[in-house]
Length: 79
Figure 1 (cartoon, rainbow, N blue to C red):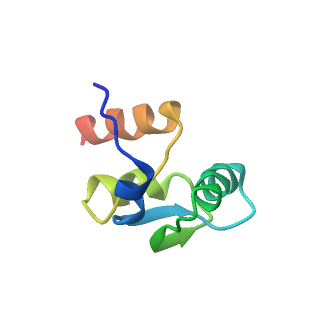
Figure 2: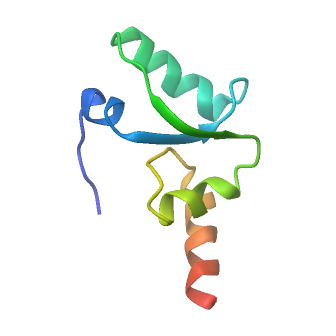
């Protein structure tokens, strides 16, 4: 399933991310900066495995590699 959202929509949502210094954090930060927007961070961590769980719990939105999300969802279905 595919959903289109604008950068301004993303800027208004609670955002879950890795800490600065990780590519998965730096690339979206650069895109937002170019648009003159900022994320509203509610969690910044250094463990990518935690992020899908926080998103699934409804604590915010975030960017997660597809393989990480697939693994997290498979684990969720088994428990």
